[in-house]
Each structure stands twice: as C-alpha cells, then as structure tokens.
Image 1 (spheres, one colour):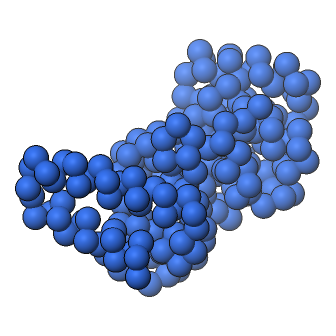
Image 2 (cartoon, helix red, strand yellow; image 1 turned 180 degrees about the vertical axis):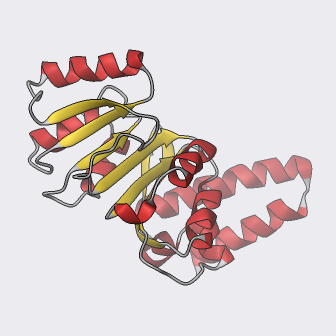
Length: 213
C-alpha cells in the first residue's frame, strides 16, 4: 500500500496519536496508519479540491470514513485541536518553511518532514529556532530521501557539520546513510573532475572522513 519512503515515515510515528498529513497525496499514509492500528484517527490535508477528492476516494475504498477525514486546508490552517503529530512530506524546502512559519509549532508534539531538496536548509531552520531534531532516517526509494522528526523542545544550535549531514544520522551511521554518502561522494568526484572547484574537493574530503574514520 505504501512506498518505502512513506513506510519509513509511518515507522517514525508514535502509536495512539492523531496525525495531520499535509499534502496527503491520495490519503495513503493516513489510511495506512489507521488500518494498521498505529493511529486511532488521521486527517488528510489538501490545499485544492482536486487532490482532496482523490483522498476521499482512497478513504472510501478502505471504508475508513469514520476515522480518516479529508480536510481542505492551506498547510495547517484548518488542523483540529486533537492533532498531535504533523507530517509534511514530498514538498520542497520553501513550501515546508512557509507552512512552518504559518503555524504555532509548539502546539504539536512533533513534526515529521521529508523535503525533496535543501535538507541542510531545513536543518538550519530547525537550528535557528532552537528546536530539537529527535530522529532522522535515510531511505532509498528510487532516490535517497532524508526524513527528519523534530519538536519545539529547546535545543542548542547544531554545528555546521550536523546541519549538513544530520546529527542523528552522524551518530547512528546506519547502512543506508553510509550508502547515500558513498553515492554522493562518487557523484561529486565525477563533477569535480570537470569543474575543479574547491567547494567540491572540501565536501569530498568531509564525506570521506565520515565514511572512513
């Protein structure tokens, strides 16, 4: 029912909480969370009627009309008071930042984010607001995706290295993260063979230090 990317997000969600999935993409994640008994209730948020109607179709297909609710909402503007966990996945950094800027982050227990680009900028945003990165995962699902779970709990600023590569990912050093770094290293080497830029050379050395030390 779920892609590897969405399944990894589901695995990061605490059991028994109500989830609001922003830009829900056919309500697949909310339906899965309820069907598997992870969440008693979930919301599928969409900004336009077209995607919302597709979410309704999925909800009806699984007979979950009493537990999964489609909501027309710009970001979290119409999220109910019963929501504890927010998922924002499959969007670009600037869209995610706009949604976070437009809500009271402290109202929710935590957020699970998956940005399609500029993940380092997302971590910088979290660091600049003194939020806490609670968990991070890398999943390979055609491409490598980084998933971040953070809360509004206060935390010291993260280091440049942690912002670039992820504090939890650096600590855990799991196989998928190391594979992602190796692929990134090889890609940069090929680019640098043509471009010969100092920033590429520095990043290659940085990645090699993580991989081999």
